[in-house]
Image 1 (cartoon, rainbow, N blue to C red):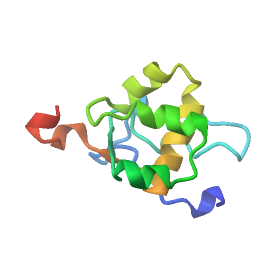
Image 2: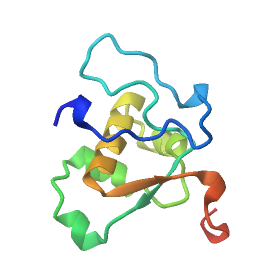
Image 3: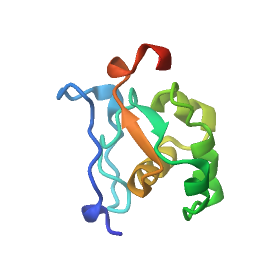
Length: 114
C-alpha cells in the first residue's frame, strides 16, 4: 500500500499542532508524513489474541505490539522499545492500518484506564 493511500491518524486530539508530536521532515518519500501520530496518544488493542495471530506481523511489529498495554502512551512505548523513533512510529502506524490497535486521547480515557 502506498503512503498516499493510508488512512491518516490525528496529529493530536485538540486540533492544535503539538510540537512534541512532530518528527523531523525526512529527505526521502519513503518515511511516513510528519506528525501522523501524537506522542501523547494511548494505543489500545483492538483485536482479540486469536485475531492478532492471524495478522501478518513480523518480529519487530510483534515486539512493539507487546508493549501496548492500554495505559502507556506513544512516548513511553518509544522509550520501552529502544528502537529508532521513526521505526517505532512506522510500526505503530502500520498496526493502526491493520486494525490491531486504536489510538485514544489520554484526556478522554475512562478513570480505570489511567
